[in-house]
Image 1 (tube, rainbow, N blue to C red):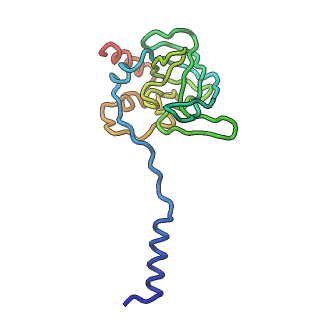
Image 2: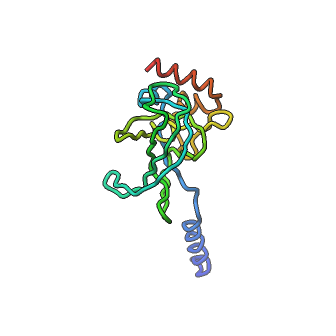
Image 3: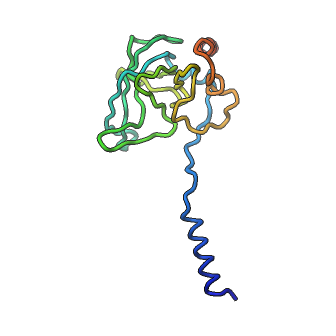
Length: 181
């Protein structure tokens, strides 16, 4: 027979196990290849985020914060940029005291140079193709986007092909993928 003390200790142990914090799981995305990323994009550029504006919008029937970043095009790697500056729309941002983080979405930092794969979404705006998989900040070499989700099937992916590469090597690989699409 179980004593009252043993039962109470067992109950407290079970409650503690349920209440203890666990590692949060981020979203998981299927890794895209460089060829797929190129095929889903109208342009690939090296650009610098100049400024950004966030606002509330209805997206898929729900109120969301959306950020539009003004991007200076420093170089067009592939495709044809429509001008010296582009507007890039991403999900998430901050409006007043309210912020929204969208895991897996590209995070363009003001003043930072990046390689971007962009799709025209109309209204003079572009979206980053494959979310964070289409955004590579340049810090000496190409780096993964800050909010890149855990990827499945990384072997042969664009992330594997581009992260750690110099800009000149990344340019060569991107242009090769564009020719093959």
